Image 1 (cartoon, rainbow, N blue to C red):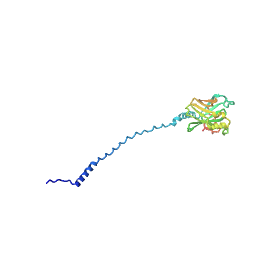
Image 2: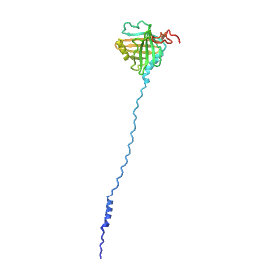
Image 3: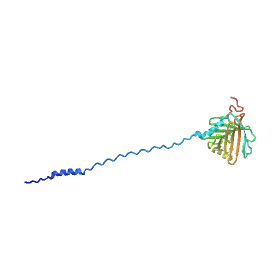
Image 4: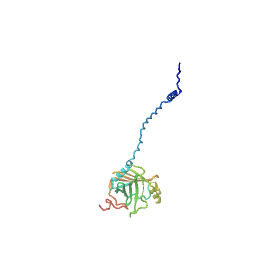
Length: 242
């Protein structure tokens, strides 16, 4: 008798499930590559600002003071070389004019200006934080200050070793106005120095006023007495020897 083999359905089910599971499995996604960092940009340093050499800026003024300081202790005769327009009752006309480089320090030089027997005037040149200053010290014979004193101005630029200019400063303008000298509110003073040759003092105004007195530095003269209001020093005429 022929027999037919029959496959039991419960035996085929696990096999089908196993094959289905294997067919649905997918390959793992590969990890994204780690990006290579870009090279750092080179650091560029900002250009340095060149430092300002203040000594170079003040060199002409230092040379100017040094040139004047060479004649410390000496006196020199002078003469008027310009006086336009001449002022009435000019106190300098026909008088002996003598300058005396009398007191010198690192930052100040005092130069009395003697006009005949009038010893009331002293030019004072000092170093400031920004340049040089010129002041006119005017005294009476008893040493007291004149009403018109301590006027002048400061340099506006470095100038040169030969010449320094001093435009009138605000306090001097106020003084001139208070003393009825409005004409002087536009003054500019100047000093020129060539060691061993000449010293020039100048007053000028935009309106055309020009006064100059020049001293011969090649021929020292006898020292004058102490200027009014200043103590006597060794070397002054009439001063006791040290």
